[in-house]
Image (tube, rainbow over all chains, first blue to last red; front, side, top):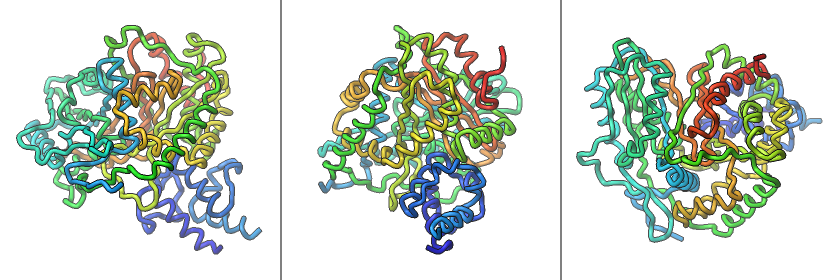
Length: 82
Length: 450
């Protein structure tokens, strides 16, 4: 799956979690500034696992890994290429 | 089953009915229903007549504020919406000689409101305007939890502030009369959800639950609040600690572990050794795709339940990670949706039998304490009637039992923590030290040396 397509899906899901429009989700903004809380973030992790087959729970959940949706999309695409 | 809808009838959801049952239990135990209050602190003074007029005009747009719960022939409970407001007004009180509108004085005032069983008898919202001689005032909104959750209350106040300032567009006013289905279908699925919940709770509750005894004279004891406000720097530090300890954005598990560590010695002195902590955490409900956007009425809540040996609370950082994993496991297993589904089924019971059922289901123990971490603030207005808003704080009454809980809300860059409790559940000297200790643990990981 292309990085852009992954990013689109991530934006749609975050928009759903926040009750916002996908166009209003800034892909380069840190997730906590988008308004995600613990519950929303956990839901996003579960979505990624189900949708892209990538479990991030055991990654230590460092802030750098989730710097923005763009970074996250790159990471998912990279994992899929391996 | 196809049930006719009506603009005068709004079916209550599973979370609404769960709140109704908890409210009933509190009323039965203490003689007062659980309500919640939001204090909005402002700079400046209000022109009282203008504030009152704006508030009444605003409330009159929502006749459902004067509604009541009723039961449909199809067994589903619903909110009966009056056709028009008539000459009814929402409770409004002006206190012009309040003195200084400090957080301490305002909290003492809210304790009076929380212990007044008649404050919200006819209308689901009430407003107290507290102002004295100085240039600070507070607006205290009281809400009936059956009609509002915390997020809805913030949306309601936010729109009121903009309405009062003449900045609310007509399209921003929600139409709560839009018909909602009765959700009296998919009985098999709802039964299955109930079974799933039952199994999960049995796994979570293998042993005895640590509970503090309610005072024998609970009916005569007042609800009390203690407030801890963190400044912007402290709030940032707490968030950084949470991210470093439990993982990015894992503030709720971190706060829960910190609360458990703070409560542990107080419980350990009073309950049987080996008892487990069971904690209810209320969260915003994750709405299924395609669901109607939330407006500010009714409860969009779900609950998570966390269980762990009381002794584990001593190792806070490890506990925070364990709780994070429990949170993930529950979301992955679809527990929030299962709880809502099971509660939809339980709506066939009136609040009292539902309350009794819950009590039996939890083997008469319910949770050790309750925790709520509110997400991003939805009260974004910066002024009300031209007065700058400094901050806002949530002060809910925790259902009894457990009658003990912590609520965190963020306003601007700062967190407020409220300890809500039924007097007598812990000695006042222990209550007094509890929030200081919580602050130390939240910011530093361990309480400051005595």
